Length: 131
Image 1 (cartoon, rainbow, N blue to C red):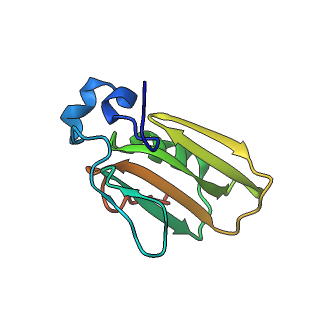
Image 2 (cartoon, rainbow, N blue to C red):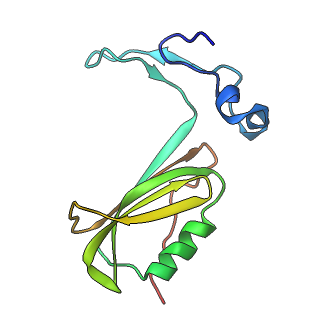
């Protein structure tokens, strides 16, 4: 397959089914350049949501929240601390419906999560910290 500028049609990456999920037929969308950058900006029809939360989580509550994320959330990662293990910081990664956790070598004082999803991803995702 030949590509230009690393642009690969979305349907090749995700399969033909993706057309019904709101993606355009053009992989590169509109390209524009800004004055402060030499890199092209593509309209990939994805959006992101950053969450910064100062409270520690109950691990089971967080895992249930991860499992309940809508299908429009396709990627997630971040640093967090759990109430039952406050001395360790954890790295969370999500791809599709699969989530994983591993102890971090980097310390983070607050929980920092980044979610990436399709245009249908909600603009805010509430994380209920109640037990």
